Image 1: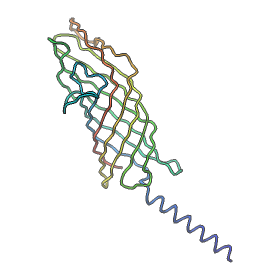
Image 2: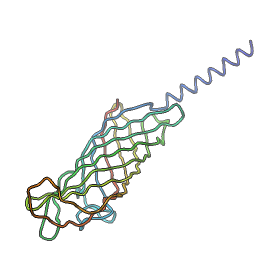
Image 3: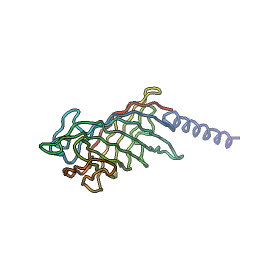
Image 4: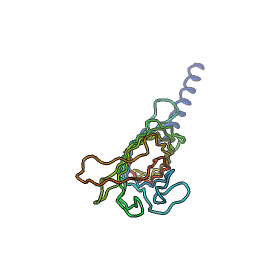
Length: 217
């Protein structure tokens, strides 16, 4: 009888600990976000892009996009994160050289395929550190010359704190991407323009910050 009572006490204590663990965990989540991003490049493209040394508000490159974030557990004490995003570069004017200008735009796709939640016990926030990649391209277009494109591929490390207000989420995501692709610009092939122009090479390694507003499912 004493043995049974002891086993029952141990079982109750274990059940209470498991209940507390679930109570203090955010659990599995899927979050749809809209986000606004700002890039700080390693290079500044003749002083026209925000970079590590100087920046101005609303200088290129600015993006707006959508993303899906997920948080899940695999049965242990850790929780993990994944992140998929697509963003369009907001078109802005740039000078290609002293006499010629154009509009810079583009897109990027991002994937963080492994992330670790640094605050797994919090019900009201998460902080995911992750690795993944970004890919996409910048494009400069004008009526007077062939459009130029600069595609890139970059491994990424990220830090993404997010706060939960009921179903609404507010997040700040910081990424560093290391461009491992070619720096040169190339003419877009499907065009009837004949004039070409030389564009300064650009390495798209950058520090990126995203502000996001999301809905938790």
